[in-house]
Image 1 (cartoon, rainbow, N blue to C red):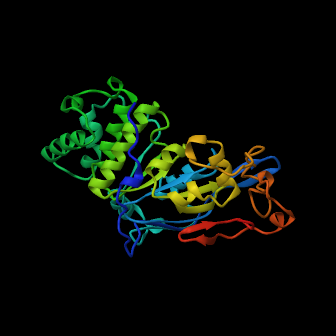
Image 2 (image 1 turned 120 degrees about the vertical axis):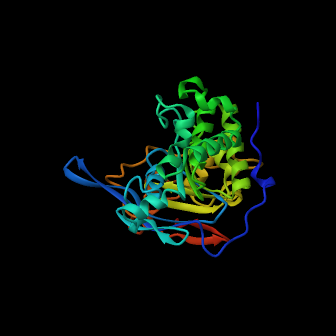
Image 3 (image 1 turned 135 degrees about the vertical axis):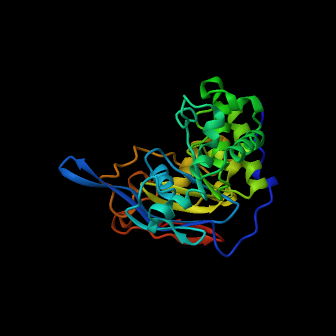
Length: 332
């Protein structure tokens, strides 16, 4: 079985003054029907992140924590309720029509299910070339670019004339990656891009993404619940719970020195994600609360082994506890 290339062997990109992506107090709320009438679902509730150029920034957490909704806001597939999204210093949340269309060149997506991401009635050459047609490239330019992209993701030239159903899941995801690269984006939002694939194929696709990042200088926002995958591909990691970021830091700090009890519980539930000695950690108890009626104060307190009365009264603010590592917990 092919293994993933350890990120520790890769050179980290140099820091730049302007990050590729930054969100400031990003919110996405939905009005829904609740038990007693209309209620507000705070899917994303004040997320602030900074993603340097050329790095992979991962969002992790349980299902329903808001990480996929955050990803959709980043590419304006859904409009944020409040907050700012800065792409290379430009506020995406304020863009309209033609400005938003031009932004699409710089930001692309890779989704979980490659088959549903493609039109089954289109040949691969048309699927990969569609973004280029939308932006006015000539037929000869599209033909040349499509063949170059297929080669870059290790697909044979004859794949261009086939349909999606003729490929395996891993091959389909390679085609989707080729399409995402068509307009030479700077940022790609990857929403669970390997969770639908077999483990051996996951490793191949992750290695491909890392090779492309190194060769093309790409920046990734990588959304996943699989901590073993996150450990291999990430430079930085943010842990989400009920629409909020509870801990952010470099990959090494998050996996070797987790500070928030939720982060520690997540890692304790995946033995392969932690190496060496581990302190005894109490595994998560209970279910994640409803975002329609979150707990007062610290949203994690109903499941936290460290919770005290103070946790119900005051929401913890993110604070720096180590270089580049922030945690929102009263007792971390």
